[in-house]
Image 1 (tube, helix red, strand yellow):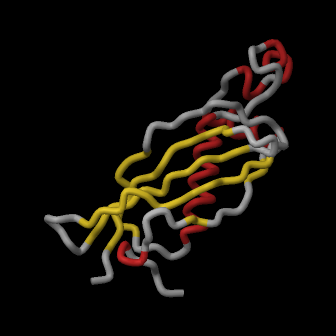
Image 2 (tube, rainbow, N blue to C red; image 1 turned 90 degrees about the horizontal axis):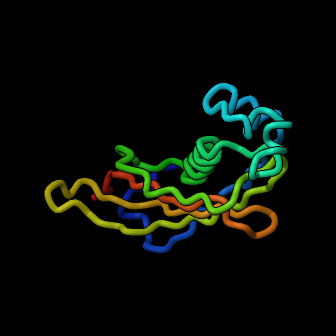
Length: 147
């Protein structure tokens, strides 16, 4: 498959992503390694917390979204990531949640000083099986131009 370039992108174009499912052991394993808050790793402490049970780390949620979006992009001529937009986490991710991502290209801009590249944002939102938004953000990329 030939790579896609900045020139191939269309403002508002959807990126079709697979769904994400997290189970309790995956949540605890990630949290023990990277974010050992009691409401991520200890079922009793989590039950007594404001969340009423174990929830996934926001870092795990963001990492999983990153993986799914990168996979869905296929072979893109990405030169570099530039930044991650402000991350909003209105609802927690719980064990066995099924997350669906809504992703689209936005803010396409060709570089004036270096016309061999352009910038684009993969803006995304993930919702759980109840239709609740669990994360919103975007990844800003520098992407090579075909011409």
